[in-house]
Image (tube, rainbow, N blue to C red; front, side):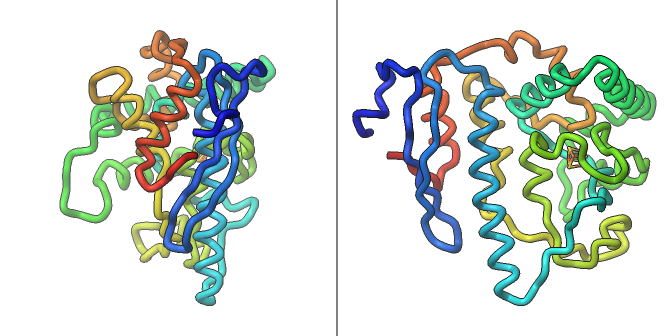
Length: 257
Ligand code: SF4
């Protein structure tokens, strides 16, 4: 650790150099870390930054092989899937919802509530959190959820209304197969761009390690309910550098200096 990484930094911000290794080699970049008390949600901007770097490189690798990325603005076909988000992202998305103007927030929350009631009545909630193990490549609950045809509460005119704040899983989902196949993913072999390091997993494992018990990935469409049930965890803080260092530890192939 270099001297400007010390938590005693009087500015309250430390600059950390992070090295990530993916199939394209090693990337080195600097991120700013708040040295004061930090909530889990506050780790998300760093995870998003790293995801964008990795996702851009993964897309470039595909393009070098002559495969064009088919995803484009206005195509929300994948936004009816069961999207898993890490607990820190769930808290982050709840912050995003809270920051919306009242009228807009009411609309978005009524969509969330509609989905929550629907899946509750269908008895799907438990499987959405803890999908039964299977040898099949596609989880039964994912298919069941998709076939309900319920758009993500943030989807507007087939575009993401929270695009700058969308979770890691949405950023990692890019395809090279025809875009219209995504509307019928179970009738086609969708060619997803492989991501070397899906970042929602280390964020989830980090949360489990901090609370000392298993914390599941949260289905995006159940975020408000989950956050309400875990409000205390959402407000808990850790020293910023400690939280950041642990996150990097859980990233595994990433290093920091
Ligand atoms: S958050 Fe945005 S990109 Fe992700 S599923 Fe919802 S509408 Fe689609």
